[in-house]
Image (cartoon, rainbow, N blue to C red; front, side, top):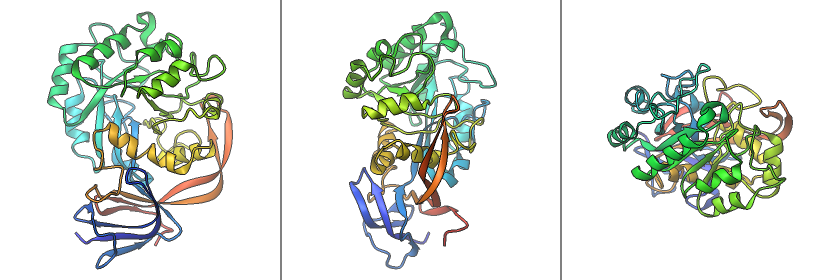
Length: 374
């Protein structure tokens, strides 16, 4: 495999602490210590932004569910690694492993849904009663798939848990504690106020759909409560996980006005919203929305590279272009262009900058080039 050198671009790599003009050299699929272009295929990124390959930490990739999307379709958006957010439960995880997790070009990891059948989609919610949450079965599947499962997942919307209330959450938390795993919690429209709910979260647990606007939200009392700030301080991870039903401008704008930013920015991509305009589309589109909301570009990049790489147990391997890391690169053009962003309620905001990938490299191989680049 020929060496590739991306030169003259403005590299933003929060993990490596690089923010400036930099040459990235890739040999044999990994980033080389030699930061030069000697003897390599040269890619001129002058006037463009260079990032480590993007990581979509919350998407739905299990195609045994109506939610599932082929992960390799995300490459053209600059996504070179991703994490499935608990689409598969114990019953389907083996098939998910064989047909998707082990076959994709992307680097993949997954949360295991605590409900044995996972998220079927198609208007059917996962059961969460005692019969559906089997600690022994969850433990067995985890032991068989330690290399790919990074945590457990539970959804606790009122429409899903019904009269069970917090019982599924508490049971999932106990199992996660027993197995030494983090818990990823879908919190949209929970059965109790966020201030009460977040007290249960441990360091490393993931609070998902940070800016959802249905039912109890993070700004119910006119601002961010001290329980949420305390959770952030003790290491709870807050994931924006946009989706088509889990983002509200009024909540996001109020929270961001108080500097309550997401730790992770992700799409919540499903078969229902993939590449759809205005709401989700792809990860660079969602990143552009957070630029419009006032997040610094370096912080946005960190939320789609270094932070999710750490949560996936892949520090220094993905989410960075430090020597020895996987040769995953996305070259983007930051265009001055009016762009409409729409939330769950149909409210719109117009941003004036949009990130567009022009080239994507995975393990030293070019996997996408925009027609107008090179």
